[in-house]
Picture (cartoon, one colour):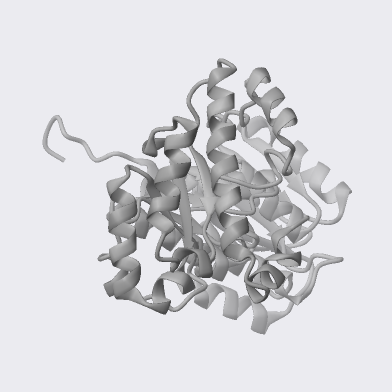
Length: 355
């Protein structure tokens, strides 16, 4: 049963403290059982509700759960929400410091959705920031969500905190988080919630995330809903030795961009089946926001001059070619795009002599 179906009722009925104490004891005991079964030491996380956190005997309850299970404090992570901490900052700080004295780790859950300030954040004795699933959901295709998620990763690193992304459900989301050096993930992409016996089997199988793809040279992404056009372009560019990917829609293209190191995108101006964000240069503007180091070329049979001018002025488009295209001119533009990308983002300055 998911928490949103019973937590509120448990809080309103006054049962949440007793339930929380039972969950804490059982989680610590289960962690000890896994260790006794021969699995490597695990750190187990337990969410604390607001009512439970402000109980006067919370620290004693945590200490007793650890003692009874024979579990070191370093193996327990307690998750607190922003709203919980901000309800009474001084009292929260006092309790957090007492919990830290037990050796436990503290995580700030759902970061970015509450009302805390950075001034308070630097005072909190926390070890982990957790990116809320609402930001992770759009990290591969929504520039605003991606900006918030990556900013949280950067903030955590600057404060020497670990960062965990919640609600990771797709491979593109994982790839984006890896690219921005997020430390850990949780979510359905790896596994749905399972009973302890099934989790024991996951440990026995040593299940792991797939390794990230290795860089594969010069990669070009063609985005066009006409398969014949994409095939003709692939044939034209075969002698140039590019690795060529193809997507028919903006959403599919964004997924490929998340999964692969793409240096140049060649995109039709209008993509059938997508919303207006993918038309009138909107897709390439999204690519610019999410992947600013990827060079963008527009290829179109339409003559929407205003949209083209807007895309060029905004920097969303490196070059424009009309359909039907001139083969050699298009090949030259793509070569220029790869060269520009390398010079701007890949070339290392010389260090062994004068320039």
